[in-house]
Image (tube, rainbow, N blue to C red; front, top):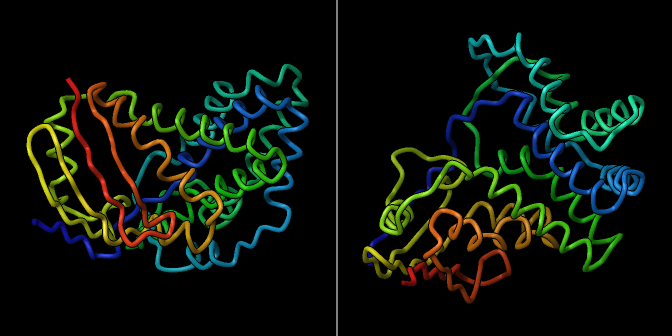
Length: 272
């Protein structure tokens, strides 16, 4: 068996405000279409009513350094463009302003804006910390949806996760062989997907790979902070994303760290 040790816990992470707008705008539009605008704002308010931002502020408070960039001058225009793209739901100017305010009051957007304005900053950071920056707010929304709408809320979250993953990989497609090679190759540098990861490759060919994930920062983060929605947010759409890369790809998995197992047992293979 081969091992792909990626125990390095930190990696350089570049932070700016823009990437946090798109997922929230996507969720706001999708939820408004499914639940109605007022119900969506109600769930949104519920999700962050008692939000604890102590860990968030700890992440943002020290060791960042500014990166020279011309992007800061364009951020406001890009935010306006994104809002126009994702908020056709608001036909009235007042509703559009209300929707944008909901987004801009959602962690970590106000905290980042207060700390760094529109600057781009960078530091060595753990995958756990990046996951909190990127997904704590979305996980809180998912929890509020399930608490309010039960199984329907769970289905809504699943649809949003699939939509987001497919949008993120819409320009990524290739052969089964390319996917298997990428999945089983140790990355040159740690990133959000590999930092703290420990994979054991049990079997590999051009059309199939069997791998056991022994450690995963995604599982650790969600089990500690959002256990109710961890599998839904991080694992449930894996096969959908694989099929989007290549329609022949399939995933078989019987246990995950996210659900409390000792390992994630991945079997990725191709069907003719």
